[in-house]
Length: 411
Image 1 (cartoon, rainbow, N blue to C red):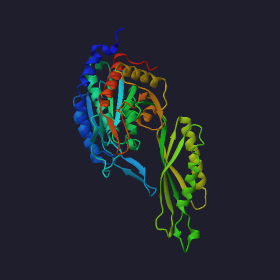
Image 2 (image 1 turned 45 degrees about the horizontal axis):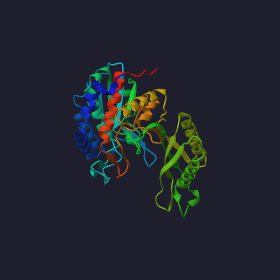
Image 3 (image 1 turned 180 degrees about the vertical axis):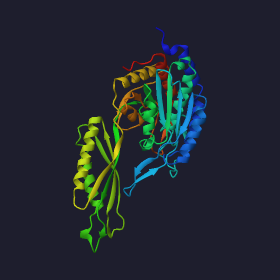
Image 4 (image 1 turned 90 degrees about the horizontal axis):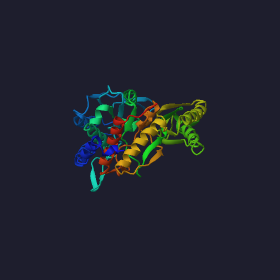
């Protein structure tokens, strides 16, 4: 049997990609040199402007939409809303029975006050810069893979839908529902977070939930009336100590990270408010229920103390991503495509979460690390291996072509 990757519908696209590295790097530099920290709405909007320009004429539909604001609890124990940038949606041939959902975010973790704002070459194959792999490199890979796919006659057999959302770095608090609604009529998902540092792709992901614990006590003068005060900082500290003690006791691998505590003021005043921030990671839905039950029980215990109020607020915005039988079918296709271009590939579970968790939560099989190679994301050392842009674009293009040529039976 002839290797399908040697036939013209495949080679047409791959040969075109071989000539695109300079164009890919040029676009990546333009994207990365524009700050798009999540809450920099103007900056995210400018990145969307660039991407809208690049997607012109590629699909049947191209729209930008407002994203609902993010609702977060502030250090005063009150809910506050924060505006977000627009999301960009592109679609092509949605009338086809087989449809792919492709997604990556436009925001980064670097705000306008960060000193890390521009790209630089460390050597001719290593590019350092804000978002080069997380996830502006993924934006470039996705775009050029779709351009390559559309050059093949096989493309007419399959539809696709793209979402570029502005808030993944804070858990897609505004765009999560949009993501689920757009993905609901697709058969599989491809997302473009970076591969792991050793080149592995992510299989299963832990679920992630962010929570706030708000403790209210009673203020008093620390000298004249100390005994009538109820110290919220101390009471909350004892509460979160009990939560921290859950670590290492969970056979399912759940973790509880107390990342921040805020409270108090003048030292001659008994503080009446303190707020702690908690992140919980879990391996599966059963562990998620158990972890939340345990934390809530501890909070309830401290809430029962006289003259104190303690409450837990938050959700698991990213449910555990479990590798089911349909996800394995996508992995097999990716493995085959990687072998055909001589790209080493392995799979590894991780504790990190992505929008792939949300898609898994609605039952959409997906693989979410089709982005480029590099390391040190979320730090000024973030870097990209330049040649991986074409490698990952080729990998994605081949997967799309396979799916169009020989659709998977999802039953």
